[in-house]
Image 1 (cartoon, rainbow, N blue to C red):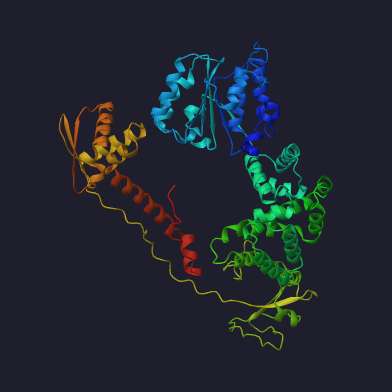
Image 2 (image 1 turned 30 degrees about the horizontal axis):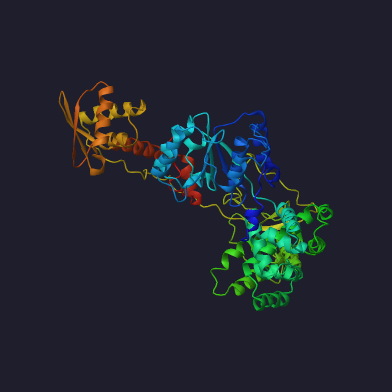
Length: 618
């Protein structure tokens, strides 16, 4: 007898044998028990999670005759009646499986639907199972819509796909959709242990963990990898053999890399990377394992109690130790670098050199305590060092001169001495802040009152500040002209009439999109009782569809005329009138701002400028 692979030998025959899809099993079991059966089912999910298996078990549940031949619809098919055995063997005449990946045309679907008019030959229901249904063409989907919506009472549809986004919504709305989830590594690990126990094959727990993680949620992939590992290991499953078969790095290398990065040991990082190169281990698998370990470490750092729940994993103790060595922020940074670093491996000429660069990147961006402390101290130092080294001396009160002389820059070695051009002011705030150009003017008074007098006999510290002389006010500025040019329009009576008509139709939303653009960009050149002539500058606007729609809109507005459109220079169109009106409003707004006395005083005394484009009419 030829060997039967594990994925086929241990395919579930009933709902109770299925693992990892309890939400689907419960829904179908309750529906079969209460006989609330839908006529179309859609099963979605990644490869190897049980879509075809669910379809076959559902077909057996619908057609099971019982061991004594008197059974009915049941959630637990007997597996011994002719219907159950024929469906398992793939020869049941009333159960049809269609592979849509190779039979995706409308002819194949019509050939299948032609069988729907005939009642079942052996079973209770006809079941049409279409696998990879998203591969069907649009014509094939349309051909099956009517039958899928209202099939005969003896016909059931079962659709399966790995890409439900490509299935038309018209098909989705006619089906009950069940999403089969990828299986957790723990679920796969438990099932592999059960299968190997049935096969009497010795295995190491860590080898099964590697296979469960490599399956990536697919039970079929896990069983196929187990077949390969059994053949590779000569009938046994050992961790070293499985790791070498998968090309994954030993977790000891991963732990050594993480510990070296935590201590900032670049030498150990480079040596471990070279060891991976010599052993021929995959750089991508190393970064993937690092990501998984760092994720577990981040969970342990956030929730320390999780360490007790992972006591069954022999690597949990080492992960808990590393979680206490590496700070949480570095764990998050290294996790992000490991994820994004996998994309860089294909860009580098040597993937191991790329792996080394990804690992050393953490050391390059590793926060240094000394640097952080010095940077913090530098940010907190807000006083000028020269001023701190030579504190200002208390200045005696002086009388301001009638003609103050220009201030003299103080010497670096001596503190500045107040002179006749210096006024003593008390120090109220040594914190620096941004000062507007007019706030250091002595004449500036934000409260509208005179400046308060200071008691020069007090012991308060004072700072010598130069008094800037006020420039003599010059003559008033000439009224400024707005910068916006108002376009010139050669207005015509026909243009006035056409502008009002087009704007009314736009407001009433009788024209939109390209039709409205044709009306706005065109000029009404002439109009007779039954014919109007328009002129446009662009040939693309003169399309038959837009012209006919504009003609219908004019008929709705009370002008049943025929439109003719020519291409030429446009001088008076609704769009030009709207642009001229907008430019005129903009020019008026700019004139109001430019001729404002307060704005002119700011421009004259302080050199203020108006930011172009900042003036908008209300």
